[in-house]
Length: 131
Image (cartoon, rainbow, N blue to C red; front, side):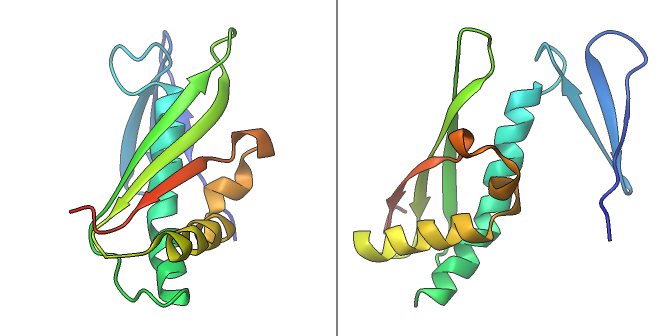
């Protein structure tokens, strides 16, 4: 099995991505659409949500409820990602020890996490009973 995406740019730095029946825009300049690094952060956070839910279930928390991940990417002098951090807030009342176990399991399950070089694996904080 493979995943397939077609990326088309007629001119400039903006591209349209055809993903099955879906279309997304990414603009490297960030003027007309999210830039490439914002798109990467969104994909990472979006992949990590189901990983957290499954990780929670596997660590004794059946329902995390609402999940909010504030993703931040620090850039180096070349405007490349140097580090990523997640501030994770969940609705469920989860103690710090269990939260850390859920974070760790989530990273084991997240496919985008696996695809990133190790220096870009997100540092994460976890807050239970946040909503």
